[in-house]
Image 1 (spheres, rainbow, N blue to C red):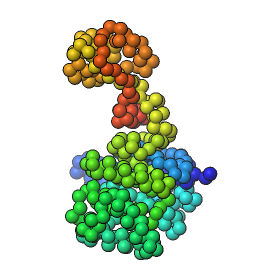
Image 2 (image 1 turned 45 degrees about the vertical axis):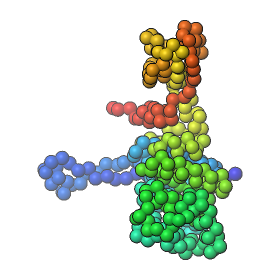
Image 3 (image 1 turned 60 degrees about the horizontal axis):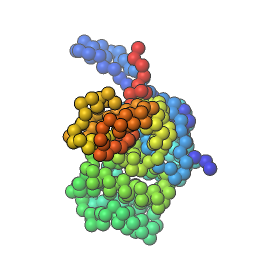
Image 4 (image 1 turned 30 degrees about the vertical axis):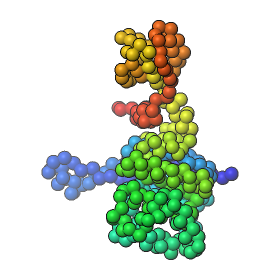
Length: 330
């Protein structure tokens, strides 16, 4: 089966004006402007199969949003190629634009002073959605997100979480086959984040929509995605399973121990780095190769009420990925 999204050597470069320091530098800049080349996306390649839900991660400025904009046809690449749904995105074919949606957490597509329902009607006209299909889809989405009573309320009067739900409904009204999500839960509280995650998970299960998700909230990634693509400084540094990310970059296991004596032994640091200590409990960072040895020694020496071994939190793993993919300083 042909990939629904494919990118090969995708590259985007910008010329950025370099302002000199001081008044004299500013005056010289009026006569001779100096620029530097910034490579926002640097030859990345990947394929996404139909129905996949993939996390697209990277630190700020890594090139995530630029990549999504190229895949949606908003901007042109300087080099490389891409195909989405069999189309070249930046050719902006009408048939292509009717089959995908882009949701950007920091951009609004709804009219601020009008009820969301009016914007939904406008989307119906733009996409030529049959009336029966529109009513059925809108009803399903408002029920899924529990916002049936809010669609007639002015968008500016809604909370941030409620507005994001309306943005998501607007993006899904024409039943896209590909959904590109750029920070859909940014700024939302935990309750709203969980609601958006639930909607995306259930919608994906019901419709089999292909989704590419960028997020700085690792809860989004853990709740939704099995595959992760990581980029840094415009370059692809990892493409694989979420579990494989921990295996490759986790490096340490977390051993949580609760001692039956009610206190942590004074010499506990001999078994590993203490990450957290609280009353009779302690959390150690331990080399995976020494887990058996360490557990055996602790259980032999001390009475233990409870013990567990886990991978480090995904936030720590991702931070290590970013650190290890930083270019060497000259």
